Length: 271
Image 1 (cartoon, helix red, strand yellow):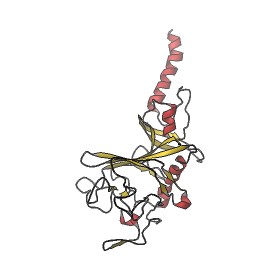
Image 2 (cartoon, rainbow, N blue to C red; image 1 turned 90 degrees about the horizontal axis):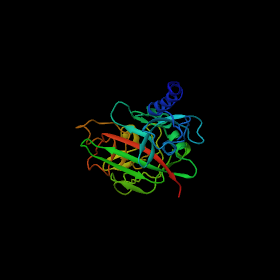
Image 3 (cartoon, rainbow, N blue to C red; image 1 turned 90 degrees about the vertical axis):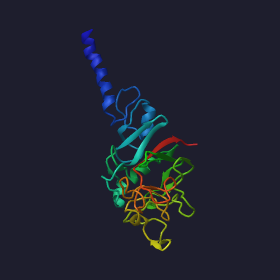
């Protein structure tokens, strides 16, 4: 009996330990061996008990593996592609950095436009975008968009989103007419794809939304009311800045920079 436990029981214990402490791999429901999934939604489907953490994935058609943070929620597995919780990681990056990504998945980071596009171009599935926001007063809000997709690099990773639901307001389409960011390409401080040439706001002319809003990359239009890649501002110093983490349909009228943000996507069956 003791020898049987030594041979079989230890193997089971080892498997349990693997499942508990090694979330860097997706695991088959049977627990037979690690399996690389295409995204966090698939990981959750294969292993409903999977916990939130860093996993290795390989989207179909992508040339290599990469790590992502999976937020495992009751409604499925969400792949996090942006997180901001403080000012330690600067988002004042150029086109190449936004294309390939920066930061670490477990902490503040940007996954990268090329990885995000590869992740969300799977046949037979559509994607939901979720934006989570936290303020400095203990409040939180979210925005979800059906039909999230990106164009390729030649199209400047043009943003497309469908129907909105949430509590933060539809800042992508704008707090007022004429600043809809849906359908615009991504802009950085060294590659301008916004709709300003220039934009006139009162007596101020803006040629580059990225430069004028903190040097971060985003899907600017004229310039828009959503922009989560400006400078992070601490409590008590987070109101009134043109640069900041802005979602102007939730906070205002003065520019309000968020305490924390998270952006993530989840796959759903195409209708």
